[in-house]
Length: 457
Figure 1 (cartoon, one colour):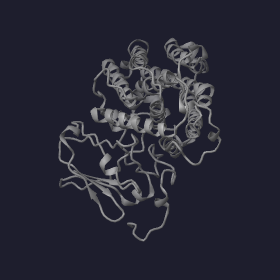
Figure 2 (cartoon, helix red, strand yellow):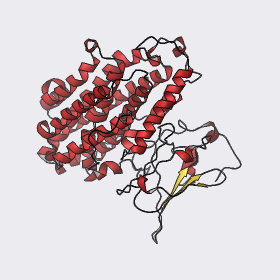
Figure 3 (tube, helix red, strand yellow):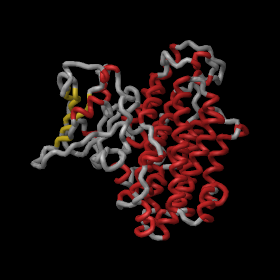
Figure 4 (spheres, rainbow, N blue to C red):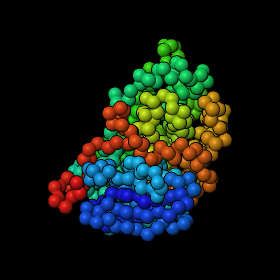
């Protein structure tokens, strides 16, 4: 197999930072340079993965490589297979966030998180800011936060630009075909399950925004982070609108609709998850910023994971195209938000202990497992309860590694369809909205926007 990747202008070290997990076959990597391809060595055996998933990861900055720029789209990138079959167009999607893109976390990934942490701490030390015991640079009063340029925290700024490039609206999702599936193809158990999942989602985005507006936006004094949080608040509003619109479209009974919209009071299991999140928002919790940022990474990384997987299960069956498309948009967004929490966590000088972080993560896992085992069993839609619990634990391990800690559960991903969502599909732009499409020009560099006679046409 041969995989073609875009050349990232101004970052020659990219070639040294690629980590690929591929199936048990020899693979050669080439990067599309404006003048000549640069070939890498064959991938070491320890980086191969039997599921055949291809993962792109920048070990130097812990950020995924950008592919959705104008140069890459013009190159008609392909995955050339050594076979008699004609090769099909294949664009590797690396504009999805770390938690949704990575399918296997190994020692290499843990090393990446540790490398990111050491790089950030070195940069913070170079700023020579006087700190009292327990103080954090990113939380310290700073009058420069009122002026955005020059950018000081480039990793944080890149997350903001990535969020900006992924903007979408609820009006872009076509729900006309969903009603046919809802009324004619789903049974009562499946409709019950989906309605409860949507009720949780419609409530949870408001809870996340409550924390952002009330706490994080006020506490963090870094201009680049405030940009990200401002954009996150806006996109969370779109998520809430989308889920409310789905409930309003599917549910015709006014009493049931009101019941679902008020799920935080009417559905006990949703109230339990909401109360767990609320305890980290309350000023009475008196928890340090590092603890609270881990808790909300768990809310967006763990509490959402099983529900996302259950909706993608419907996509695997070819049902509810509008619901599944909106789920793709929101999965991408929430993964980015959880990753941003991990990024800010690495900017903390005084991080909570491994024991504290593990307690938060395991609490979230226990609540999520109870949610799908007892209160809203996934067997209602034909999924396996034990495998769902394994998937939740798998996601928790990914979050732990992203935070710079070792795995706790050491389980594999039981759902192949959740791996497949990280690969960009061959969507016809004239038929439907593409969920991994980025807004033109947002993530491109100055070199991409300049005219060159050396460019490939």
